[in-house]
Length: 51
Image (cartoon, rainbow, N blue to C red; front, top):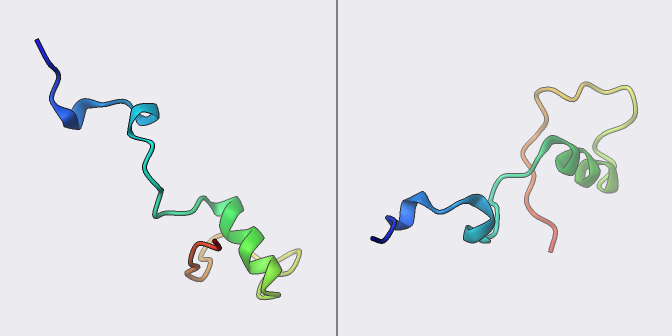
């Protein structure tokens, strides 16, 4: 019996994530000099992936 394709585990999917985690967004903003130490980590501005 086969499983439905929507029931695959996360490691099997392997696709590119389109949402960044908070630490990834902070790192990008630091590179762009739009975030400095002591700024709030909630309510961060939108960022795009750096490729």
